Length: 259
Ligand code: NAP
Image (cartoon, rainbow, N blue to C red):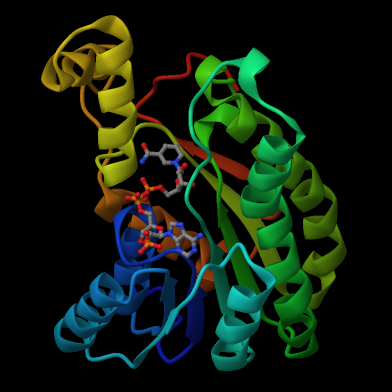
């Protein structure tokens, strides 16, 4: 399917690896020129070069921490004219509800709620002015069904979801859509880290922890960054203009719910 976005420009945050890279790759495949961000320059430059060579699109890079004011300013200097914004950042660490203090919550809220909000506040006005834009926020299945050991993530991402629910309706009259993608377990470094934490807690091997987690998913496997990315590219496409303020769960059926 032609997604109708060839030649548009997108900022994909936290995109050198994992789900962000999956989104960048699917947008590149659709002919979208990219600004990619991540903290580590080496992997970022390598990813950018691979996408340039494979898809023939322009790829600019900004090596910066997107959760800091300075990192966002550096990124926006290069990406102030994008038509598409994909927000993403690393997730907060797992832990126990009794172990988190104010600073831990502030850190998680900064990274996973206030950062995407700040990026939207910067980029939405131009998108609205040209009467076309797309925003996709990478959140988590924890918004729909809390993951007890990820309380920081549950809290911060639910706040973002509330903000998006209202704001999406305010910008839709101007041809701009905002939607959230909620990943279940996907095969990335983040999933490996969570497998390792589960293995350490249960005193089992990392492979056994993965096998047990796969068994909880009706699809009996982890998702892939490539299929996640294609869902993102579809939400960014010209065909998705009537999808407004939605939360799309990609979890292989793990959360058992009618709606
Ligand atoms: P990942 O494989 O660890 O990749 C994270 C990417 O983000 C890397 O490119 C990393 O590069 C970059 N990054 C991390 N922190 C950053 C920051 N502060 N500023 C700029 N770039 C940053 O992680 P993932 O699995 O793709 O996860 C992406 C998001 O989805 C996370 O918030 C995660 O919690 C959420 N999620 C993932 C899953 C899953 O199963 N994978 C499930 C639910 C939710 P640098 O380290 O070089 O910056």
